[in-house]
Image (tube, rainbow, N blue to C red; front, side, top):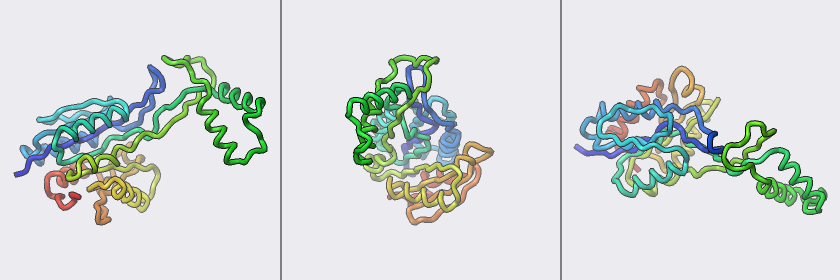
Length: 264
């Protein structure tokens, strides 16, 4: 019998706007919980330890030999995963967490941004006759440097607040280098996509992040009455799965050995 240390990420991350507000998503973590519980149900003692890395409102599994590791931001998640992969011999990673694609870089108002533009045109720093590409680049730099709102809690009576977002790092792209022998299961969520688009997007993630498997599904199913999607392997094969239990069972089987051929 082999023994497996597993990381499952579940729920959603949270990115602060100010000290009391945040940007998050609708992820519940229920699928991550189902995978965790099915893993122990089917694997028993073969599961040496589970590290359940979860967002603030994620559903929690009732499993033995489990360390729950709460995170808020993408930065928190990156630190926890790096530490685990550095200190533990992880055999499988199920990255089911809905990780924020964006975080707040600056907060301003339409008024402050308009004032900055007006001043730049009046002073000659911006000239309407300039090359379009050059002018666009200057405007972007200017808007990014517009006066920010005060720290703390943004006043509720401020008119037209503006959030400038920046992309967060794609943590799944770092997992294979940190865990070259692990089974890595990635997740790809689209909205309103056709079956062909779902499979194609899953294949792109599988190749770019060097995953062992990718589950691609549509938000309208995930947040609606049930779960449905496609489990995709490196050979390009896609298996349609419906229902949280069926998805959890198939992924657990892959981790426990029935899917050992998916190791990369």
